Amino acid sequence: MFLTGNPYVHQIPFFFPLGFFFMLMAVFVIFRIICFRRCGRGCHYGRLDSQLTAEEILKRRFINHEIGEDEYLKMKEILKK
Image (cartoon, rainbow, N blue to C red; front, top):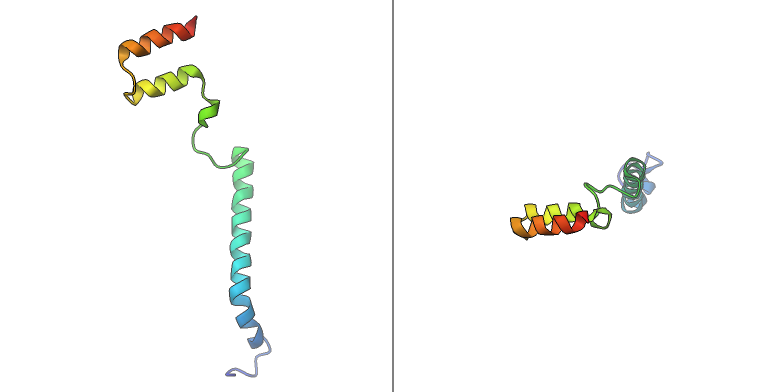
């Protein structure tokens, strides 16, 4: 090989496929640990739909124009009872 005076030349081909993979895995694990510590269950922007209250879901449907104003007001009154 070229560079026969360097004792670490025989380790370079081994490092690139496996060493690169292990470095990527380490970065991924560190990223997930940071997300779990910051957000609890993981990095989620906003709340999960299963955690929304009925009024929040109703308001979101009204904002997205899935229901009209009269239907929104009627359902809101039903939820207040």
